[in-house]
Length: 112
Length: 120
Image: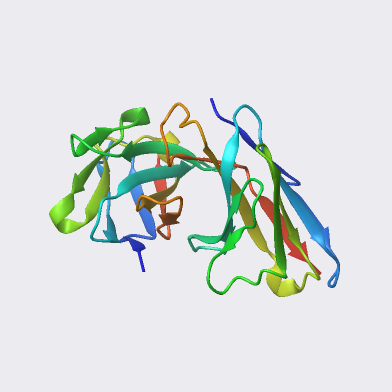
């Protein structure tokens, strides 16, 4: 069965630090990849997505993610985090059907 | 942009009663809606896929008779937790897929705010 693994459950960073959240999935075929974010008190929303083409995708608020097919990875990055980036981040995979599978989530806390 | 409204946001009920949660797509037609359950510090667990006008498809281990899903129109899906027990207490989240692709494209989900169910 398909699965999504997020490496860190909790991450604490100071403002201006760089961020990288790991995500690996298990599926050998074509995938659509997503990062969703849930800010405190808000509902899940799309941060960025990869369907095809350039494996480096840019999303909102300065986030980007790189799809490395050989590593089955889709890590999320941001060069300099802000306090407002404090949220929970979910990596998700769609394998072409209607089902989207989510990772366990990573809670990011940015210290001001 | 696409908006999904979920109601109620929080419900408390007595053990043995049934609770209905509604999920509405406000500005698009959701041919497919999904119901997730989220346990504390865990991921979203897909419970079922709801297709307008047909029976829902349940994930393995999810009791169909306990979690009744109805997708009566292109903008409304409901989840009814029947004969609720304390172990059903959880955070239930619906999401919808825009049948026309939407601004972000196919397979991008729009989420409701979630419903917290507490069964006493």
